[in-house]
Amino acid sequence: MTAATPAAQPDPAELVRSAWAHPVGGLAIRAALAWVIGIELAIQLMFGQVDLPFVDVAALEVGFGPRPIPRGIFLEGAVLGALYAFVGMGLILVHRANRIINFAQAQLGAVPAVIALLLIARQGVNYWLVLPIVVFGGAMLGAATEVTLVRRFKDASRLVLTVATIGLGFLLLVLEFYVKVWLPGETRLIAEFPTPFAGFTFDVGITRFFGDHVAAVVVAAGAAVALG
Image (tube, rainbow, N blue to C red; front, side):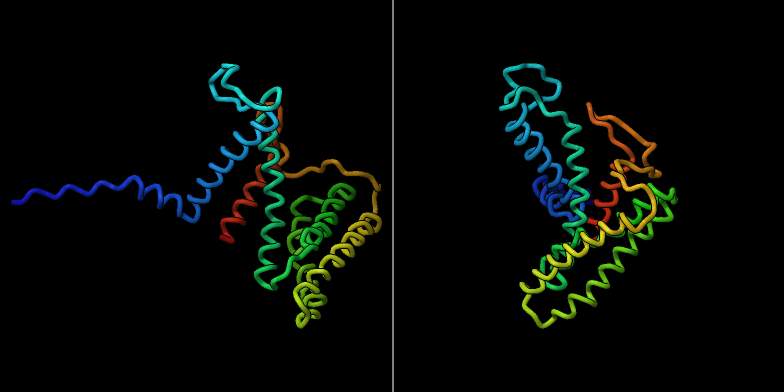
């Protein structure tokens, strides 16, 4: 009988390269490194102090600010960045399809979103009932833009069509304003409105987060992975 050949040991460098190139895991690794280097080090160094975990030595905490910026502030900014990621994904999709920068991208979603918000705040309509208005309303508004605007400029230069989207953005801003007038109810600034996720809360330092923050990050991350 012959002795069994020992299994080859995996090359650590090859494992690292495979993890780095993975379409999902590699993206998470790069995002984590970008967070640590760009947020926890660079921004803290410029505007606060680099706070070393479990170390309370003043000489080791360097930076141009008087004290470290609370981590909750960074996380809240990341949540807002996730919302802007939706706009970025829409810009990329439109550019890949039509080779233009759609400057009306945000307004295409803002008009149905304002309608849904006002129905909740002024009429007390259930959140889940108005959610289709945002999803399908934005899709229908985008389709209407394709038919009425984009196709009319199909033979024009991409620069001309890009400029046309700027005008469309202003028209949608006007429509967004009049929606607030047309829907019955008190005309006031709406600071908050109830959602099914608002009851879940947790604190990171001095910053309080709600389930709405978690939902925004989860949906944005899921959309990015799906598109990827």
